[in-house]
Length: 310
Image (cartoon, rainbow, N blue to C red; front, side, top):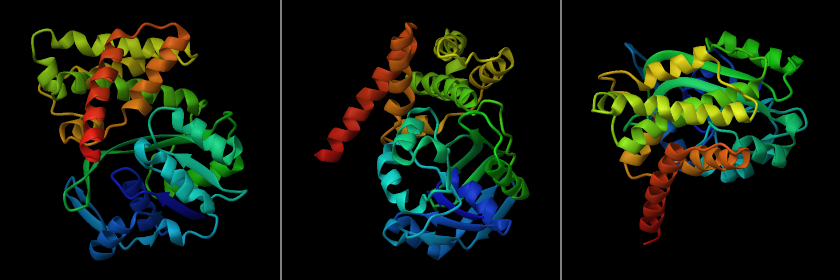
């Protein structure tokens, strides 16, 4: 199976590195600067008492010529439009595109460009970051990539992809409804992101402040209410798992959205929060705390955009 991984960051780079280490035919579509760094250092995975590297096969957008069997799309939503155009030569009539973004707006964009039959749903759960050296630093053992056809069928291509992922040591379940799984991840990531971004602190810093323990449950209630109104209620077990993450005394955890915010970088505010609150309005669900988080992140985004244009 010919596999193209779009992006070699903390998520796509990690899954792609596992596949390459397992001997799969993997190519990474990267920007020229990232390509130069990877050619010099290799693609390295470090942390958790391990350090290993692969020599990645690389391609830049101007070099992409032929279709692949599987495209793993792992980019920030802010780069989605460009990534779709860059990857277009790699998407043929038999290509399966598995996006690893959070939220759902990207599925609509991919469906519009390549057709819904080419696009699967995907949910990535992995705790990695890209460090200052460009290496992928693994912070927890999780390596989970749920995926499936948008209509819920377990097709032959899904079985082939699952076998390849399993062989690389990637936990690759096929949920009964991948879109529901994506909604549930969306609820988690917006709850987690809003807690830390609104309060400008780690989970533990927020939780340990007076009044802090009430914030996570209140945000979760709002996000889960939107999912339920859309036909994807969050089971109590998953709600409990989310609460355990955002209600932990002393926890140093923050999501990548918070790291971008704290570093003055652009965030995925519209893809994650703007889209969710717009759907809430359309469904008649009140989300005052999520609206506040969205406004907070939009102010930051406008500031970053203005500084870039100065």
